[in-house]
Image (cartoon, helix red, strand yellow):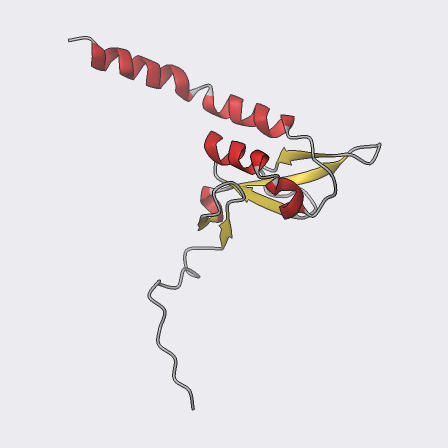
Length: 119
């Protein structure tokens, strides 16, 4: 009988499902990632949109809510591979979502930077 050693990483099954970010390729809990899905257009083209509620049909891809991961996924053409679609999908809806997601936090960080720079 072959005996195997326990893996060095703890088993995460009690914390929830783990997915891989298509941008940075790091594994995270699904609660930490955004799900994106391909939505078919009428003329055979596809667009990628954020599935914030987690209930849109179809194959999903997972992404950190970070601009760097988004741009890495676009640059590497990871959405087409992960969602198994042909051609280059339209990603403007995801870009808009990230801009609206980052916009409320920008004034707070700018204000904090001003407060730190003034004595």
